[in-house]
Image: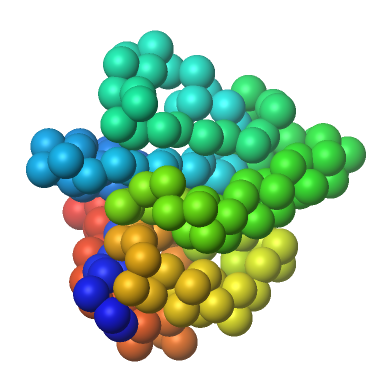
Length: 161
């Protein structure tokens, strides 16, 4: 990669979002601009009042319309949200094009692979797209082995108890 860092925070344990947000706050503390896009968690995170205080240094986006987690939705509501989630993924590519941030965080984007909404190749193309432009952090429960080779850093969150 050309000067940018690609990180993944994955695993079945809790804390992936908090870790990614922490890395975003770290980036802001050294003068970087951060875009944080949330997937599969409903719009709760985007509506969080304490996170609004981080703007404009950390811009938080959620393209979902439902309050609830994607897994808790009816099949009909899932189909509607699928369109919104894909818009969020396409928006991530546009953010890289515009250069409006130094760090792009895609929280739970790996879950879109698990659900068949995007492919491993889509993530790989995004990583290539970020090369030399934007640092990237992706999170999710499961990391496909094929993607690990494209990561500069990989952290696994494991629930021990």
